[in-house]
Structure formats: structure tokens, C-alpha cells
Length: 217
Ligand code: SF4
Image (cartoon, rainbow, N blue to C red; front, side, top):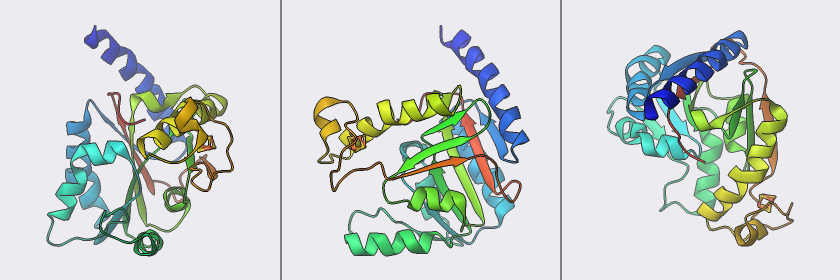
């Protein structure tokens, strides 16, 4: 069962890789999260020569062990925008500073077979870094993020990822009670900024690690 599913997704991910590379993204394919971590730490990170790194919210990144590995590296400085002990003001300031990192890690809400990244953000720091600022951006994406097109990707985000994330983050939003997006006006609304990243500019600035595993929301 698992083998044929792995093969099925491998074929889909290979096609997505072609499309993403055609849109100037640098793409790496990994069979699982462990291999993704190895690719990031032994190939991508050294090639960027990054000295200052940061990251935006991504369950896949948190589960990967990459953050712990980065924090243990003596020759690397890092900005942690989500450190539990930091005050809300301090977190905001760190999100601002993170936009000038050499290397920024994040996930994506969805990606399309045509090779686009689709995201919907609360603060905008994650999509802000995707758009401009950090010299390099690494996006970790499990196979479950792959959608046919922009329409399906946006449905995935508003119909599933956002309500599920609001529940995970214990937000006071109507979707937490119903499981459906109610297009709320809540102060804790997590759906504020859409981005569609059509291409990486400059070429190769955004590096995507496609992982043949169900990861994140
Ligand atoms: S717009 Fe509001 S109700 Fe809809 S998913 Fe986002 S936070 Fe939930």
C-alpha cells in the first residue's frame, strides 16, 4: 500500500518539480523528512554561506529537527520570532528583523501543479519574506500541499488549512467552533494576506524541498 502510494506521489512530485524549476525555483526532492533535513543542512545551507538565519511558522519545519540543528551551530546567528518567552512586542520586532536574514525558512499553505506557491498569512511576515528581504528562502512542503491549480489551492487553504490552523493555535475565531471558514471580522483572524508566488526572482532565491510524505496542515 505504502509503496504504490509513494510511487504515485513520486511521479506527481517529479512533474511539480519540472513546473517549479520552469518558474525559476530551485527544487530538491526528498523521500521523507529525515532526508529533507539532510538536504537542507548539508547542501542548501552551505551553498548559501548564510551567517544570519530566521524562520516563519511551519509545522513541517518544527518537526524536521532543522531548527535545533541550526541553533546548535556556533558560527551561525539566528532570530527566533516565535520564542515562547518573548513578549508580543519583542516577537513583532523579531519578525521585522527576520526580513533581513541571509536565509529564511518557512512552509507553504499550498503549491500548484503549474509551479506556484499559494499562501495566506496572519501577520504577513512569512509571505513578506517570500516576496522580498532575505537573500535566500527555503520552503519545506509535504506532498499533501500539492493542488491542481490556484483555485483548488485557495479552496484548500480557506476550506481546510486556515480553520485547522486556527484550531491548532487556539484562536478565538468562529471557524474554531464550526470547522468552516466564516469569513470572520475577529481580531484574531489569521487570514489577512494572500500571496501567489508565480516565479522566484532572482532565479534560485527560493529553494523548495518537496517531501514525499504527508506533513503539516
Ligand atoms: S477568515 Fe476567520 S473564520 Fe475564516 S478561516 Fe480565517 S480565521 Fe477562520
